Length: 194
Image (cartoon, rainbow, N blue to C red; front, top):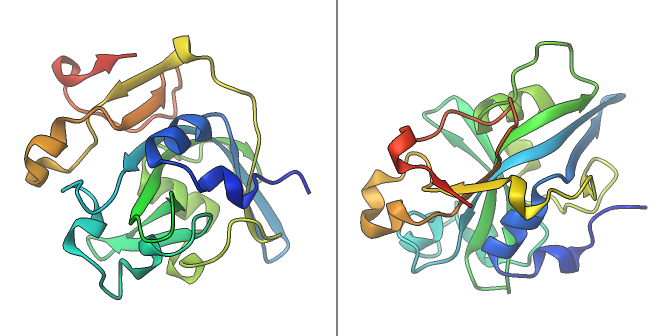
């Protein structure tokens, strides 16, 4: 199988967030294969990162983040939108990468919106049932895609983490600059080019 190996994820979240750009997120369930090319990510680098769920310590919700890398962390926000993350770094680090947007590649009807974590989860059929699943399985995996050159990558603050103090301004959001599938970002004055 040409899946990204578990060792791919066992690295710092910022490294994984960058290298996930261009990778293919594949969900194969119920006789359907849905594929999206990752065009936007956000890194959450561990307990000391106040925007990271792990900053609140080990809880039933965050336990998966402290486990081995290469596992899905899927949670519900606002009681209605799922968010898909990949657990990264060493066991115990509490780090993950949120996949914010994908470009539809296969199995999605024309016009399907995948710009934003809730929309991409809805389009790909990702729910809390996928939480804690390994990312090297026939049902859920990531494959190498077309590498994105550094010149095509933008960086800026993560979205929706204003509560995190100075951590809110860290440029831990990465996106493919010219992609039409990137989610709405912060006001133009806050965006930082690569």
